[in-house]
Length: 180
Image 1 (cartoon, one colour):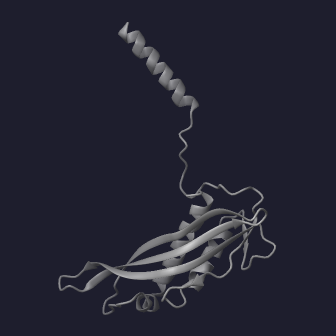
Image 2: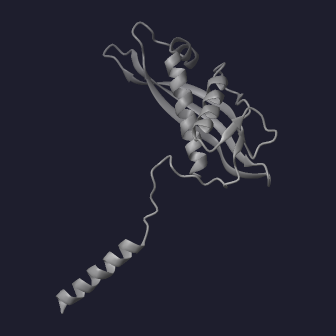
Image 3: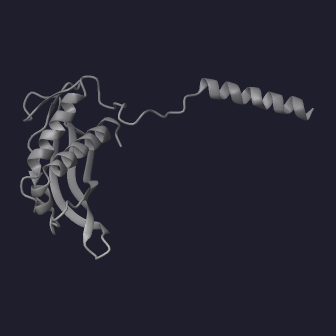
């Protein structure tokens, strides 16, 4: 009797598993935007941080990320678009996260905090917003260079700025598309 019960239970479980979907998808592959969204306006981000010039590379990277998604065209203003993405960089902080034996910083973490909004123009509805979006990136200190502020690090390491901007753009666009 017990074997028959286990067999029935196993069969029922197999049917349930075969007919249900788990709801998981590969990150970066989802899209919660309405199908009529084709042109996205991405005006220049506003920079309220003390890191001069960080808004340019971030805005450029966000525009390139939308363009790279294939389905979307982007333009640098909010006229004749289906949706508008606006952003304000609120703060950029530099924090030491690793040290050498003599107490010098060997790795820094840059934290970018931004307020970002994605609005559908047709019905003037906010589709996605995050008033305190954060990106954290770690960078090694180059030999003979120990910057004490984020501006010094970004000036001396152009790759750090590019990587930071690309990662910011990828994360924010994926968050919008997947409605995180």
